[in-house]
Amino acid sequence: MSTVVGWDVGGAHLKAARAENGRIVDAIQVASPLRLGLERLAQSFVEAKARIGTADLHAVTMTGELADTFSSRIDGVEQLSALAVRELAPARVSLYAGRGGFIAPQAARQHADDIASANWFASASLAARVARTALFVDMGSTTTDLAPVVDSAIAARGYTDAERLAAGELVYTGLVRSFVMAVADRAPFAGHWSVLINESFANMADVHRILGRLPDDADQMATADGRAKTVEASRARLARMVGRDVDHANEGAWSTLAQWFAERQIRTIMDGAMLVFSCGNMPADAPILGAGIGDAVVREVARRLGRNYVSFDSILDVAPDARKRASCCAPAAALALLASA
Image (cartoon, rainbow, N blue to C red; front, side):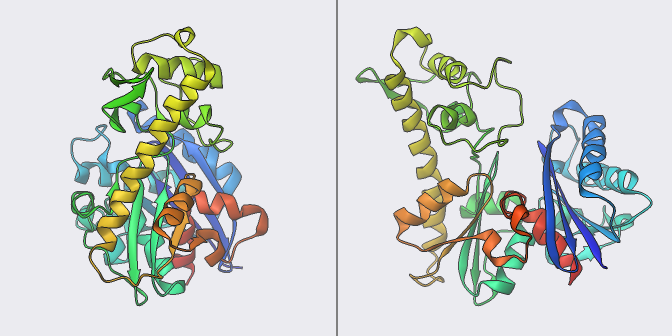
């Protein structure tokens, strides 16, 4: 039996997906904030390996090289590659260089520009094999990737983070970790526009928790104030964003405020999608292929754009009980299947 594990090393999470004979049978996401150092990431590898198991081949992609833990992106690529090889030893490890294909870990530095933040390319490449034309949208905890696929080929204008930001193909907003002050600079409250306090008092996990839209286990990070992950505590954190305490208004007022921030986030993703569609190379009936912990938000974007929505897990050969996890770990799952081919 051929076994491959795809690994996606992010700045906040480590994701892994296991493929057996070309079928995804398991996937896992483990919190591993790189701001806590490489030792924390190493611990996450140990935790993930205990669940995901050994394999004939481990394929690794990353986005964590952008973390300020490293002096540069090249430094990040080198250090993360070396750590992955060390933690996965003695198994065979291959690095994913996106447009450069799979390479040996020893060549990480020479291919750093292709390796850096190439996880989206893995998902888009798998989508191109199955969905002839679609806009792939993966909303994670921190960012949202938008990758156009046209005539079974990736049609993205950008490749690097910088290029994709400019093209609207990388939208820096996510379901959990985005600070509320990064989503909007003002909000309607008590009949007036309130300028927001520019402090990291609350994040989008608080917003979606208040609205009852936060998936189970989606929020694996500590809260902004270190207090509980409850609706009441989230209301208190959100209240600080408009300079108030939670008892200054009723529950309905805080739900309305949370709804505003959720709406602003959707509009940001809509802007990116419409910029991509404005290139004119995708037909009007091209569907949205959605993935990530924010797939419900992506589904709403598709509805507003009048596009059919297709779930990423529906294009995978995946065990039924691993479908949701595979979609939430789309790049890792895609990488495991690409490396299995």
